[in-house]
Amino acid sequence: MHVDPLWMKAFLAIHITAGALSFGLAPVALMTAKGGKQHKRWGMVYLWAMGVVAATALPMALYRPVLFLALVAVFSFYAAFSGYRVTRWKNLSSGGSAQPVDWIAAVLTFAASFMLAFLGAFHNEMVQNFGIVAIVFGLLGMRLSSVQMTRFVRKPREKMWWWYDHLGNFIGSYIAAWTAFSAVTLSQVIHIQHARWIIWLWPTAVGVPAIFLTIAYYKRKFAPRRTAATAA
Image (cartoon, rainbow, N blue to C red):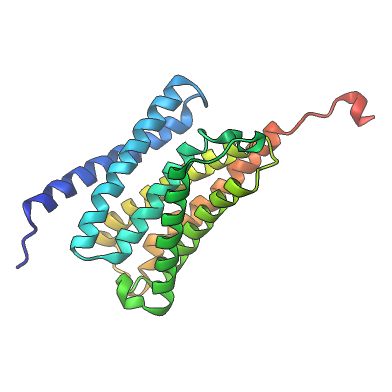
């Protein structure tokens, strides 16, 4: 019987604690007034919690080794990281520029996501036979990082683009938290070995449309109002 070393047990305890914290804090940050002190405070705590989740997940996944989880941890954290960083370089449209840390994070995430999708498609056994899930997550990570890198090069024209990215990316990271919760809890009570991808992908199937609907709502809210004179 394999017994995990003490550091693994410690990392697992920290990982679970940080995961539970981020799982509970995301709604708090979302419900507080956007741009207010409470929103920023709880958003930063959430970001740090997600950072701890990723920082503990990577060495544990590589030790097992479970390459699938290691690669997923990269783009899951990047969703929260880029959601935060976008508020720092929201002046891209007026001549600002992304910092080296933004490029490094985006390139690493794209590479990890490409590897995840590639292995899921052609070497399924290397990602613990999570073929469909690996491909979907890999494509999502590639899209997320490539969109950010495109913004670094081609200056956004839309005034509130940073708000939509901030909101969408943070919700995306919360989808990752829900995915982890689903994979850990539902797999214990629902035994569908040949369709375990359902347990991993249902948060994405629900969350991604929710992101688009939420962003669409704010686009209508921020749209310039037509005056009576203009309408006439």
